[in-house]
Length: 208
Image (cartoon, rainbow, N blue to C red; front, side, top):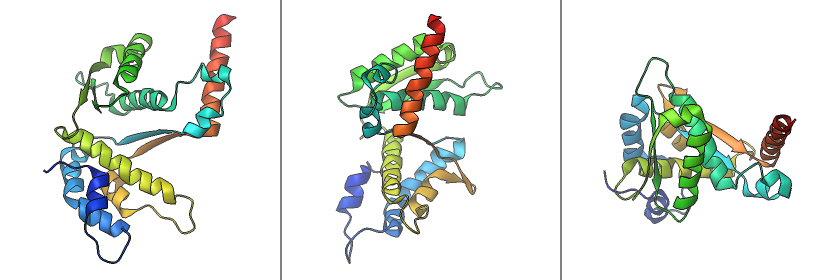
């Protein structure tokens, strides 16, 4: 498969008649979606997306922010925990997790969170086996994650509009044998405040 940068691929694809449609997206990305199905979904992969609203985080009080990390770090931690839950198998001794991420300026912060989670969670201490930061031009799974993020963002932008339905592009990318596999965890203003409050109460109980 050729290298895929989803946004560039869709933006640069020559179209006649104006804006890109969901049908266009399905057609353009079809070879890549089929590769995801054949190599990931068919093997039991679980697409997980964690969204932490920046505006919601900004609305937290300074005290609450001591109990919830910034959006990018919060999403990273929650994604690891949900990945562990999704892949855990009492019948398998090889259900460890290896974290592979795109190279970026946030590498030091996310690696720090990785180390902290291994220290704080007994389960993750055993099952988080590796972390690496890779060049997405040479690492196909990261390109697949980029494609999922792009298609999900397009879906997010139309959600709630009158008559909005699940785009075929997202369905093709996240369904297997007719069943949805995508897990979305959304921390909007309400949910992220509730998370902070739960952690504050837990801390108060431990201090008693």
